Amino acid sequence: DQQVKQNSPSLSVQEGRISILNCDYTNSMFDYFLWYKKYPAEGPTFLISISSIKDKNEDGRFTVFLNKSAKHLSLHIVPSQPGDSAVYFCAASAGWGGSQGNLIFGKGTKLSVKP
Amino acid sequence: DAGVIQSPRHEVTEMGQEVTLRCKPISGHDYLFWYRQTMMRGLELLIYFNNNVPIDDSGMPEDRFSAKMPNASFSTLKIQPSEPRDSAVYFCASRPRQNTEAFFGQGTRLTVV
Image 1 (tube, rainbow over the protein chains, first blue to last red):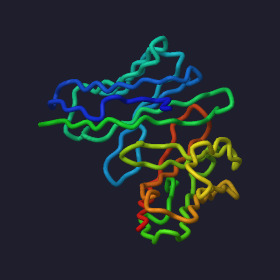
Image 2 (image 1 turned 90 degrees about the vertical axis):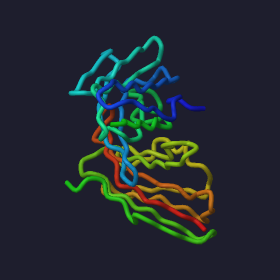
Image 3 (image 1 turned 180 degrees about the vertical axis):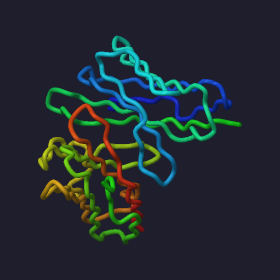
C-alpha cells in the first residue's frame, strides 16, 4: 500500500523548457513534503521542501506546489538544464501521531533533459 | 561534519551468510533511517529510530532483518541469513528533528550470490 505515489517513471524534456514532476499521497497525517534528486551511485540529495501550511515554495529554478485538498504536489524546474537529468524522489513526513518523524518516499521519476 | 557515513560501500556475500551494514549519522541528529532501493519498490523505508529508540520497523521485510542503534553515533542493519533477493542498495539517512530535511549516506550495494 503505497502512501506516496509517483505515477510517471520517466519524463523527457528539452533544455530550456519547464519540467513538471508530480506526486500524490494518501495519508492525511503527512504535513511536510520534500523533493530529492539522485544521481547514479550516489545517495539522494535534498532539493526543496514545503510545509502543509503553505501552498508554494520557491528556490531559484525550483518551485514546489502543494494542493492539500487533492493530496497532490508537484515540482517545477524552469528552465530545465541537462545537469538536471537525474531521478527525482518525492517524500512525505508526518509531524504528529504514531508515526511522527517518519519519512516515506515515492518510487521516483527519471528526468532526462535533452540539449 | 563529514556527513552520513556508511560502510562498506560494496558487499558481495554468499547466500546464507550473515551481513552487517554500518552507519554513522551526523552528530546531533535525532532521527536515523534505513532504506532499501530496488527497481521495483524504489526507496523503501525499513526502520527508523528517534533518539536511538526504534519507532517503526514495519518496513523490515522478514525476521532475517534486524537493526540496532546502541548509541547516537552508530547503527547497524543485519541480515541473517542473507538471500539473493536481498541484493539491493541500502541507504542510511539522518535528520536533526522532525519536519526537516534528511541527509543520506552514499549507500551500500549488497550482492548476495
